[in-house]
Length: 317
Ligand SMILES: [Fe+2]
Image (cartoon, rainbow, N blue to C red; front, side, top):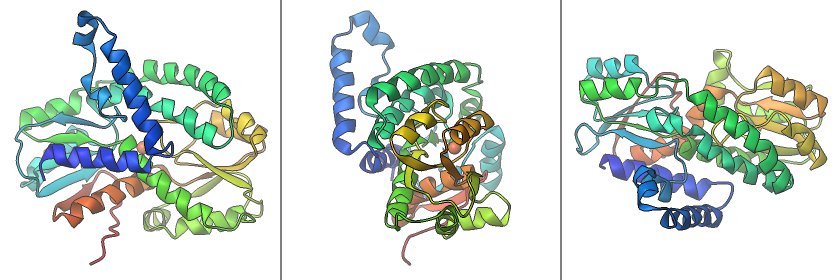
């Protein structure tokens, strides 16, 4: 496979797994195209054309040094110049894949957050409430990512001649779909400890538990009932609005499953009587990446995990 084929496959898989449904994703892309066509020639010059095809602008092709057949990839959760040097040291690496966004993927992180409005709506929060609360938070994230040195790792890849891509929301979508299907199969009378046991069976989470980074109950106790479980904090860029928990409680949600949660949000969830189970950040990122990497493995590509990626293959051998 060539770099573009690998990237397009990730976007395709991400769309198929998108909680909003493929049709809604296509409609959003169509709407962007209509808006683009109405722009003046001057405005079109500055427009990011990838936005017309790729609904996850935090997933990007960042550097093509040599457009060759990809046989061996180095994959990590965070790729920094250190991992680029690592690739040089290992030798024979055709492509480096980062999970966390870099370059314009990072600069556009806030763009994918709009999907959180529809996911919240899916769980019963009125769309107007979700949009209103998320607007504030999206602006905050857009300003927050502004301070980073976006091109640092890409410069390292360019100098040392490495191909580099990042796949963020595209693979987080695979993690959320996987978890949603696994959890929804279970009895609605489940308690938090049952949910924890269910999560700990997943190889990536089982492995992370061994080094203290497995699933954790952030709010609630093992004996408490889960009630309706919402997977509102697994995909969609980064953490959403702290004001959302009260609205989720009104919408009938009992437990939120997320990848990570800051203290301010935890307190808000507590105040809204919502249980919170954190599946684990890097292990959940690994789950989504693995579901995609299996597609590459099936096509004969060798995968070398690094930078926190817990590689678990589901390819039948
Ligand atoms: Fe992450």
